[in-house]
Length: 603
Image (cartoon, rainbow, N blue to C red; front, top):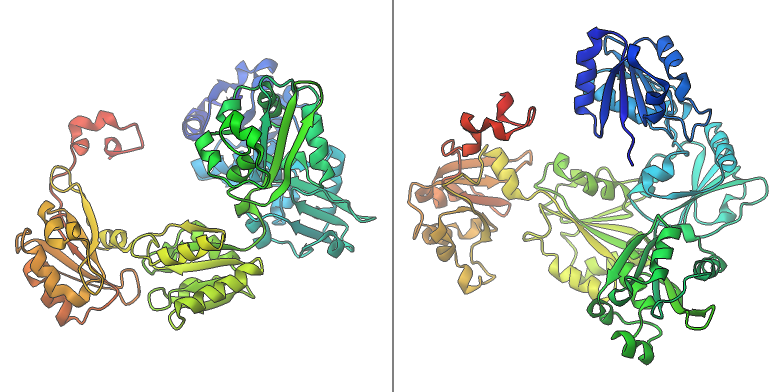
């Protein structure tokens, strides 16, 4: 059960401050006057916010102090004027530092953080696991010694066997005394080794090894009906450890729907609470090619193998680290298991297709920016994507425009980096899924079993709405946005001819059509009135941006007279500049639909 946050007021004058904090904090809060506090109230609270002098705060919270930083509550003292938020107890592990920052943001105060790692810009090793979704594989004594060596600036090696957003943040925030290594052998001179890995390592003599276990192993399980689970978990753990892997990195326990209610599955879930239990249907597992198929299993379950198929499917086709292993600890208790490494987490080659947005470097997504900062190769569409988007590349990153490369040369460049285990960003304009020309690339990746993913971007139609200061959907007037293009060298499907789409008189955003604007205008005029508002938007959000407004009857002239070319989006529809037809939700008779602080009721 989640424990509440207790807010304590010393003076009646702080009631408003307390109410402001209570109203904005997430989770349950309880506010009480200082004179009414009891030791039971303090011990029941998960966090304590004290509004008043620090000295009174310390004397008040003493009954809640457990003399153990792992169990102490978070205690934050806020002065009665609301100028400072000071974490006094439970800084990292208890969450007081984070709570102080949240309070400071709510009331416009300054958070006074005194922990050395925060002030020195160092990682908080004691909370790193919980922040990243990992498990710290260390005793309290080992963790304290690691923290001491790290904070003291002793030579530290960082060994990363997996790739994730969290490991990328570590790589981007290395302290001067930390260096990356690829193997334990390379860390021979380090006094501290921080490893993020599912693999079990031994520290060299004189070094302390702090291992964080990311949940990147998929454990596939099959068993006989009503299989007695006694001893099986220990058997599986021993087998995983014998392969140099940590059971703490089991992130998924997976099986077939037929086995979802088996006692063994419940026992495994209880033993490894960090793992998600996932059930697949026979149809899903039947489509997976397994290394060790079994006709006997097929007869019983309808699939050639449960454990391997489930592990491979859950890991997105990752590397099989432990192939199907059979066990039978007593008659009638047959079971099988297999372990695979989550493919996206493997520190191997990966291609991220990133949407660059319409052009302004500030409009790339935070996720896209992070990939650009981590990439070993950035291959960008040079004729459409400003080079300024690539200026955040790390030292040593190869940055190439694809404008002068054939498709085969692009593939060869990406493949060579992929085979070297590099992170590749293929940077496309706007959102890559809208006229992004990525279909052929994905087919190439699929044929070769290459790991790739898509990070969406802001499309130029969204940038057009923003630059035109227009809402492209107007209640009771226009409720549909059509993204399309005119018929140039690439034929349009007959059912998607502009003249047919124009029948709805929706807001229409027409890409790649400046060169055939006369044909576009003629087809639109079959159904849109000649006075329909239009906008020809050139290089949206670039420094060279130009926008020309007019009526549909003038669209071709606007484009031709202003020499608009490839990077032009044509927008047609009554939604442009429309300030009528406001939603009924904005009528003052409907203000009760908004909670305070969320809408027109406060305007």
